Length: 142
Length: 270
Image (cartoon, rainbow over all chains, first blue to last red; front, side, top):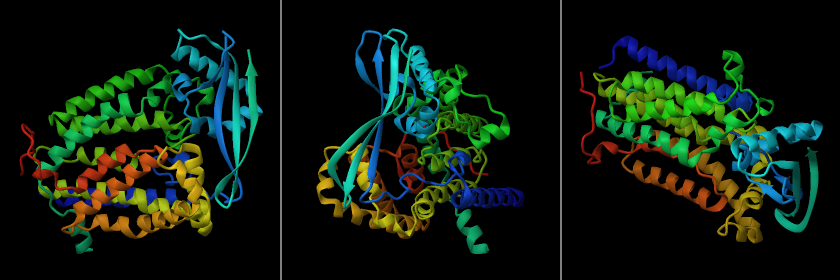
């Protein structure tokens, strides 16, 4: 059986943890992990707005144009999207993606060009209307 | 107050903790090596792309680098040792702390996932049940895990309210999810957008009204847990997102003590 102190400590930990989680939900941001808000899919998308899908493309030393998968650089698509604004302002940061690729895959040809491409799907009444556009939002060349 | 305390320390057979230990700790190498291998890849990403979390800034934790690969193997070794049931408090605490740091490495590049809180609480709670703990201590470990699991559903409805507003249910969030991550099973739904629209109402209702029922130990609760597993399976089949660590934590709500497993090291009741 738990002692009185053991029960008290556990009750206090439960209340404290719960309060932090509640505070994170109400005022916290993602960086308060593990107490941040559970915000996956929490934003509202306009049924007549745009859906943006981001990818990273590279031109390697052999001249091949390829879509860079998450495993090539260690950065997931959602992480690239989170950094999209920084890449736009400082495209030379993309050199670091190419560096990550060199470290993870030293046997593969290095990237000479890295670019972030946004494909935008136009929605109409919550359905893709078929209209899409593609924009290079940031590009770095060695 | 007594009722709340009675709920929080509602006795649970120690055998359930013994089974949970094996599953929760053996899941660590699966998670680290197989299902989320991108975490260790962060070891190679230049620091310029690192966006430190609040906890890293507060505790002055080092930015991820080659040491992450050492952390990976120490974590796996600790988890395998803990899965044997030996030194449950010491090894349990080590695994809980190492895994928390592993998660910090995972989520400090601008994207935080929300499938880990239940599992992190389960790891922390397992470390509080020692060799001589009673069924009330085991009960607390199960109930706090249940609270964290339910919070993951329940509070995500509030996050939708906070970031998406009341209009979230009438937005196109699930359409966006399918456009971006659709599978052969879900892409045809884009031609029947009303299905996705209705499902947004269902989702909020489940998160707000159904998930709290998981906290009540009624006869049919295992069926309700199974229904939630069904929900996670459907999410995986439609938008290829799977809340695996969360699903491991959800196991705590099942009467695992009834499983016949050989050679489990059980804590001896005081």
